[in-house]
Length: 62
Image (tube, rainbow, N blue to C red; front, side, top):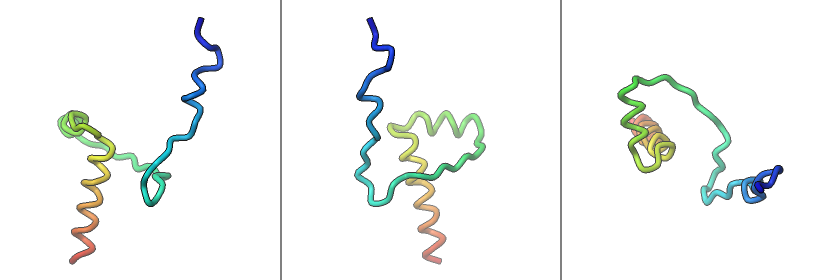
C-alpha cells in the first residue's frame, strides 16, 4: 500500500553545486520547431541557460 503522505525523499530540497542558486524564472514563447529541438537535448534547461549566457557574454564583450 502506498504511503498517503508521499515519498520522504521527494520532500528534501534539491541540492545544487552552482556558485549562485537558480531562483528566478523566465517565460518566453518559441515556435513549435524550436521547442521540439530544445526538448531533444540531453538537459533542455541547462542547454537554454548556456545559450542565454553565451549571448549575454557576447554583448558584454562589445
